[in-house]
Image 1: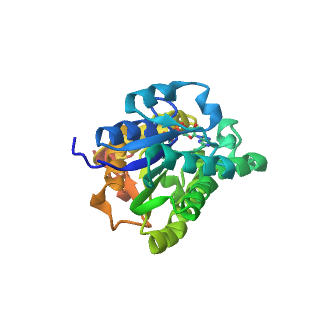
Image 2: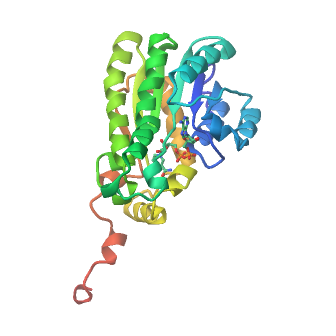
Image 3: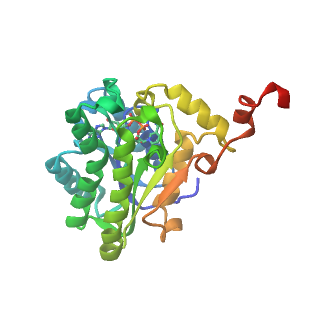
Length: 273
Ligand SMILES: NC(=O)c1ccc[n+]([C@@H]2O[C@H](COP(=O)([O-])OP(=O)(O)OC[C@H]3O[C@@H](n4cnc5c(N)ncnc54)[C@H](O)[C@@H]3O)[C@@H](O)[C@H]2O)c1
C-alpha cells in the first residue's frame, strides 16, 4: 500500500454488508492509513454486519439517519471528538428508492415514495454538507465524494426515480461544492460507478441485464466495488487537490461508447457476414 491517507480523518456513510461499495472504501482507506467513523441508518445496524467492519478497521460506529439533521449534527460533533480533530474526507454512499423496491413503474410513481427516496438518496447529500459547512468541520483541502450512476445523464428505463435522484445529487455536488471550495478550500465530487452487485444495485429490475450489457460495451469491462474504492481513495488523497465540482466517470469506458464489436455481433444481418 502507499500510505495515501496517512493521518487523515474521515466519515464513511453506507457500509451495509461486505458487498457495499462503502465497505470496500473503508477497507482500502484503512489500508492507506486513514482513521474514520462508520455510519449508517439505525435500521441498517440491526443486521449487525457493520460491527465486523468496525473491528477490522479499528473504527467506531455512530448511527445516523441521513435524512435527520439532528442525527447528522450528532454524527459530526461526535466524529470530531472521537477522531481528535476536524474531518479530511467524507464518503456519501447512500441510495434507496421505495418505488423501485415496491415495483412501481416510473410512469405511475407513488409520490410519497418518490419524496422519501429523494430525501434519502439526494437531499441527504445537501444535509450532510450543510452540517459540515456550518460547523466548519472540514479541514482545508479536504475531500467530499458521493456515489452516482450514469442514469443521471442517459435513459435506463428500470432505474426509475433513482435516475432523477442521481441528477439532483450531481447538481448538489456542483452547487454546494462552489461554496465549499470558495470558503473552506474543500473539494466536492461525484463518482459515477459501473453497475455493481450490491444490495442497492440488485434491487433494480433486470439488474443482470444492466450489468452484462455494460460489461460487453466497456473496453475495460465493468469497474468492481474494489476498483471504485481505489478511485475513491485517490480522490481523498492529496494527489487530487485541485479536482472539484466534477462528475467523474468510473465505468471502464462505458460512458463514451457508441457500440462495441461484441454487441454489434448480435445485430448484423447474416447476408453481411
Ligand atoms: N450498485 C450499483 O450498481 C451502483 C452503481 C452506481 C452507483 N451506486 C451508488 O453507490 C452507493 C452505494 O450503494 P451500494 O451499491 O454500495 O449499495 P448498498 O445497499 O450496500 O448501500 C446503500 C446504503 O444506503 C444506506 N441507507 C439507506 N437509507 C439510509 C438513510 N436514511 N440514512 C443513511 N443511510 C441510508 C443503506 O443502509 C446502505 O448501507 C449508492 O449511492 C448507489 O446508488 C451503486
